[in-house]
Image 1 (cartoon, rainbow, N blue to C red):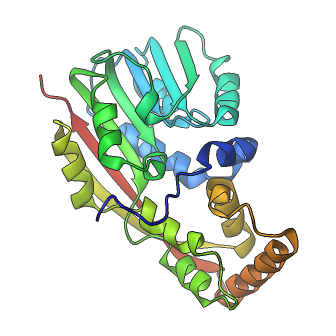
Image 2: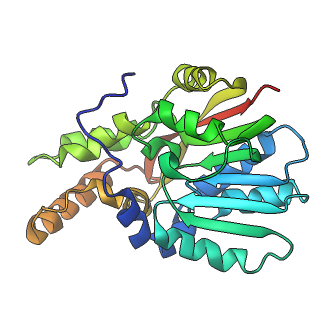
Image 3: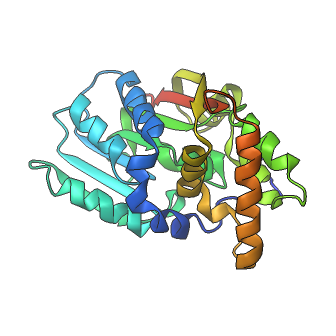
Length: 274
């Protein structure tokens, strides 16, 4: 898939996630479970210095601490200051580990080359506008033999919600549907990113699951993870009507077990040669 998109879903991501930071952990349990799955898939090693890119509220870093108790330093970068505020509260409870949490994006992390034994990025990669460039940026801080783990949105997920959005009349903002094309990638694309960044892919896979949710819970998850996608210039009255029609359409598309949707997560584990 071309990296050139008419719609850039990374715009406003820092403000969006800052506004929902305190609701995040309670809403995205599947993402948190995915971070644990990613960390458990990393090869064993003496990973003392860790870089967490798009660290959010810190759940990937906490999973790393559980898996690799020898960690002495974690650098966490995220453009959303509100997410880092939550992470700092968790970090304060962890003795014996030095935390450096900084407001920054993947392309301006300000970290030294070759300084980290492991780099992880959990459910942030899909919001990066230059995905190939982002992998290069995450590969550079790896020491020789260091490992990179990425968890992101996988191709094919959430199609049922996209169908609901496309059914609305008057239509929903085009950004709601276009955001999925911006974020989702397949195995072949991810492997190519890794190879072009000079890394050795160890495992790249997609997990596809069928989930059931109440319409309320599903839409709350969308609010928390993608509030920035909704255009800010929609009048309040129009936005209220849009929300009502979306809720009605979600209920109409639901069955006895709620709203059924595919949930696809893309995982990648790679090593820097040396």
